[in-house]
Amino acid sequence: MNAARVQKWTLFETQFESHKTYQDPIRDVTLEVRLTDPNGGARHVEAFWDGGKTWRVRFAPDVVGQWSYATTCSDAGNIGLHHQIGTFECVAYTGDNPCYQHGRVKLSDSRRYLVSDDGSPFFWLACTAWNGALKSDAASWETYLQNRLERGFSVIQFVMTQWRAAKADREGQLAFTGPNERIEINPAFFQRMDGKYEAVNRHGLVASPVMLWAIRGDDNPGYFLPESEAILLTRYMVARYGAYHVIWILGGDGDYRGENTERWKRIGQAIFGDHHDRLATMHPGGLQWVGEEFRNEAWFSFISFQSGHGDNDNNLKWLTTGPPSRDWDKSPVLPVINQEPNYEAHVSYHSRNVISPFMVRRAAYWSLLVSPTAGVTYGHHGIWPWPEQREVPLGHASTGESGPWHEAIQAEGAMYMKVLREFFDGIAWHRLRPAQDVLDAQPGEETPAKFIAAAMTDAKDLAVIYTPEAGEIRLKTAQLASPMKAAWVKPDTGKRSEAGVIGSAPVQAFQTPGDGDWLLVLGKDGGGR
Image (cartoon, rainbow, N blue to C red):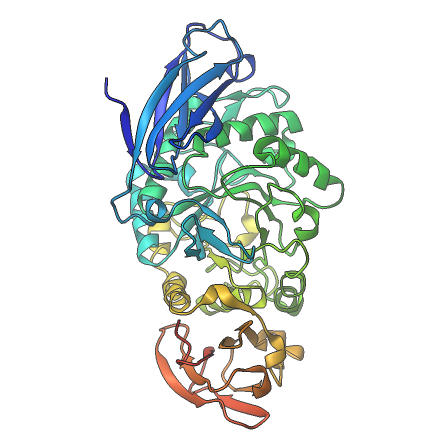
């Protein structure tokens, strides 16, 4: 029989049939697979139980050539699982899917942003589909993913198990059942989920699943599961999906501070260890900063935060002058990404007004410029709950009514994210660092909604300034390289116009050429790469 052939960074999968039936397969037996690359390097991955007597292993080869594998079963007498050997050939990838062209996502050498395995900068632009993988059918999921791809998104955030906004998946399946102290994993649930991961990657997008939704409540597994069962469940997810192009969100919407910190550190260490080849983070509750709690953990890859769905002055200041703008430079440094800013069409916590597309756009640009630029997430109140008709999301009565997902994917705010992605793709965004000192005047000090965000490269050869309102931007020219050209960019359309050059005066003022919010871009070539 010829050895299987798979392309680099795609999925190699093989299965093993047990010669025994186990009463509790997840606990009664473990199966590890040692894979040896063409250069003799070894990788170790866990196989996963897939129902009945079937175990599977998945792996994404990263070296072209002949690979071999051998299994080690904790029950050495099980000849169907123990000491199974085989080979497969990895060949170069020949398609145009960016996941497979560039490889896994990892930290850059500077640890300020994300890169693909080949070193190319990876711009995180995620869409929030918390219930999407659970509630969609295959055709709807395809429609959604194609739409997100066309709008420039690179990552899809979704929830992996039943939680307070979805008591089961579309078919009524649960990820696990049984008493909390001894759960039973349901392979049928995950067999359906397999297709959702495959579709995300097939569209050139990276999957970013929340493994355990963790806000207080007896319907959120990250809150109610004992530590041992949380580890059992998440280790199963890693074994099953760790070979996909995935960035893990271990906990969702929880409070990981104080007495909770050590528990989550232990869970993270137990499932990821000191060496893992997929990134992982924690998604905290609103206006919580957990950089200091986790930045020293080997498995913790970047700082996620949630500026949330408020609109009062304190909420705006938390984002613009709070921890995201202050604490990004603490050691060891890590990328900083707002994974839940204002959601379009969500009712604000404070004014009770519906969050507008402009507010979504404003939060996105603030998030990208007050910390070193790495990425941002978009959300729509009609997408994350995945409603088929107008309804109030389950467990979220205060958030307002949602429209159907198939209408929400056409929303105005997502088009602004396409413009945002095209703008940042056109500049060396990965070199930007916060540079508020370049501003001679900051209207946000008196009125937080008018905060002007400024970022610049260390070489001072590129600067990006965002103002949420029309008016004057005053810059200290000594902070900038010379000569530099300036350009205005409209963040709702991407339309660009010349704004002049940096002169010799100590302070130079630029007047926005029209109403609304604007980007001022400065560079030797007018702000291009």
